Amino acid sequence: MRVERESDPLSPAAAASALMWWADAGVDVIVGEEPHDWLRPKTAPEKIAAETPVPVAGGKLPGQLDLFQAYLLDNQSLSFSAPAAPRVCPAGDPTSGLMIVSDMPAAQDCADGLLLSGETGRLFDRMLAAIGRDRESIYLASLSCLRSPTGGFTGESAARCAELARHHIGLVAPKAVLLLGDTCGKALLGQAVMQGRGRWHEISTHAGQIPTMLSFHPAGLLDRPSFKAAAWADLQMLMQRLNP
Image (cartoon, rainbow, N blue to C red):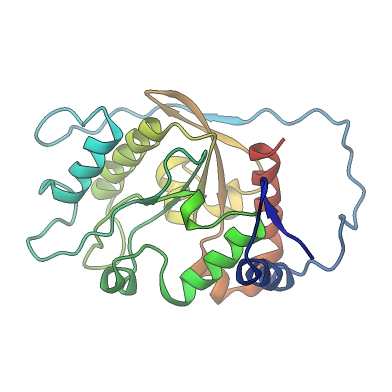
């Protein structure tokens, strides 16, 4: 079997990883088992109005991606910032057309210096391989590059991190954004995964409306494997947008 990403064949390891994800998601046929109305007009994406900007400590946010990345790396006014607090910054290719956003680094991510590491990361890599991507052909970021003491957000910190993420998305201006998990969905779309998955949304940024999907966080899929089939359906919708 030959699995390709655009014109480049995947390595045997990546192909095996994709096959493992498909098996996890319950894929056992080439086409869907249910009839699909291919002539039905696409549902208009749900637009999310821009929220009132949260005041930025120290003035205006950087207007160039490289400067904003440096801001995330060094600025001491970020939520949860502390002298010894590790930061796990964005990685990958911002020109890839696909930006994926998680909530905040897990404890293991902070130790490894990598978003979505460990067992969660291995599942995430299989999900990417299933759509012909890898970490080098996406842009992976989080609402916060710092982990909070509780591993969660308060109302104020969530609003602040959401505003930073919205600015970040506007700087990258990808073809599509994939939000992972309830925290991201509530912060940027006002909806949890079970409310917002399975359809397109739009996030308002200074660069315009950005098509956005919401789906399950890989860590959540490890806890609830029965959701993998729904996650695979979301990834298929994402592929259709990226590869029409």
